[in-house]
Amino acid sequence: RTGPLVSEELRLDSSVHVSKRSYSRRPALVATPIILQRRVRSVPACGHSFSTEWLTQVHSQALQERCQNARCPAEMTGSHESTMTCTATGEREESYFGLAPSDMQGRGYADFLFSLTDSVLVRRGGLLRRTDEFLDALSDSVHVFFIFHVPQHGVTTLMRVDGELLGAQDVEMQVQVQHYIGLEGATLRLNLALLGLVIVSVCLILLDAAATATKLWRRRRAARTALKSSLDEEALHQLPSWREWSSVVLDYVCGVATILFVGTRIPLVVSSASSTREILMGLAGIPWSDSTTSLSSKKAVFFSEVRDLLALIDAKANSDAFLNGILIISLLRMIQCTSLHPRLALLTGTIQAAWDDFWHTFLLILLIMTSFAIIAFWRFGAQYAEFASFETSMQTQFMLMIGNSLPHGIWTATVEMQVFVVLFYVVMFLLVLNFVLAIIVEAYTKQRNYIEELEIEQSLLTDLYDVILARALGVRHGWPSPSKLAAWVASMQAKFAVDFGALSKSGLFASQHDTLRFVQHYSKFPFLRPPEVNCYGLVSTDHRDDYVDKVVKRLTEALAIKPPTLKDHARAAAEHRHMRRSASEAVLVHGRSDSFSGRDSDNGTAHAGCGSFV
Image (cartoon, rainbow, N blue to C red; front, side):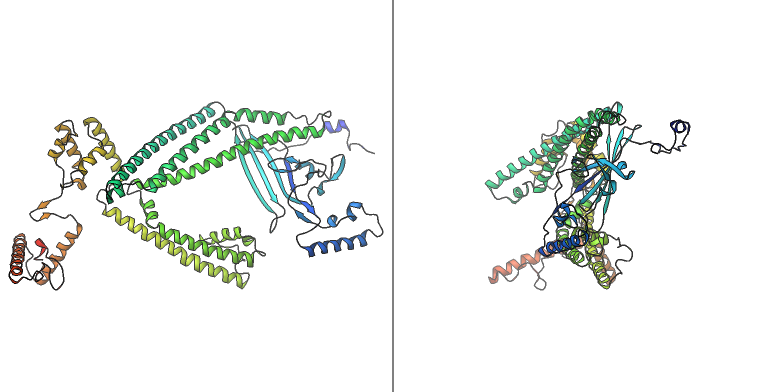
């Protein structure tokens, strides 16, 4: 007989023990999972004529064997596409498996996953269909959508499982997880406050960029005016470089892009809670148990709500991708800004010193890796998924170059693979990478030596403290701006140093007390101390003088003679002047202007004045 195996009374009296286990955050499955497949269309002719002829012959042989004593459908006997066919991109517009095409992150044919996995037969399009026929040879890809919701945090999650059925090697599976957060209450206010702070900081950056652009434009105009009057090399150096202009342009681009991001993000944030509520209530309000509502209308409402949720997730994903680009540009700009201080400029200085070598090394690496990738794709692409395409070959080589290895058993499979891997390691890992390290070490050494020779170099915290202190003292005592003071100092080219009297007479300070505080503040810096001048001129502060003194001391000790004193230096200078005067008189007497030129005839070096004795 037909009907249930047990009576209704027995079914109601029985109980089933359920052991519920859940995560601490308790996510709930909002809707039944959806499976969507994209299909390709069959074509009667293949790309190769001999393949089409072979398919036609196989089809005719199948008809002779199977349809000789049986009646075969017309669609089977009319074309070879019923047995085997070539495919082309493009989905069928007509219905498949009794389903109309749906748009869910791509056009395809969607159905409930559990309907296909838990049943042998389903009714679709007014006909009973076998569920194992949902996927066939024309199925290009399969996508399964799981939608979860975490009530405790207001997070709606989409987990998407993608399977490429017509891949180069095998079925390629990928899993993507995307979240959509509905904000309301204190969380919404905090988010809006943070976005407001972002707007304020971006406006400050744009104002600073505008001020910098104005200064660069004034410098350019002043330098061009000076170049028109006379070809001055100093004026030529005052022209702004392309690096300075590029920094300003980069600040403008980041600022405008950030404002656009915030302007598009605020409406999404404000409407996130209401959008989530509408979708969740719409999914929960579908009358699945109502027999008066057709299944097609229920599925239409269900797919519409799911598409709305996917649209919200896609909008947030696009916004996050745009923000990611802004953050990467801001990161590069932050690294560039570290060149402001010598101690922090190790990275940018090293890159700048080795930029030309880096560029040519990059071309060398690209050429070598491209050649290796072509060989690997051509020779091993049909056997190993790591070299299935040119792109995967480049990725595999990059992972090998940074220290990873091929899966166990691949590189020792054949002699050709062993030769390829060993040659790649020798060229890229042992040679090219060591070239790059040598370039970096050499550039770093140059930058380090430059910092050690820089007289004004201090630690970052010390410079910050001095800048803040100088700004505070300048406001308190009315000191002139650095640009005015620099212009006044530059006009005094004949002086080695500027003292208190010159600063007082400059008219830049309000009183002598303010001038005294200025001198007291800046006199503590060793690199601002005035140079020493003796009877012979400016005393050099080069460290090479100390080295020369040490060498002279060692030579005098080795030769057992007294080191020269200041009186000896003065006597040697007097003898040198007397020799030059006698030589001049000899030139006047004999009429030979080239008999003595003040240079030693043996080595061609000029006498050194105070150092002639040494």
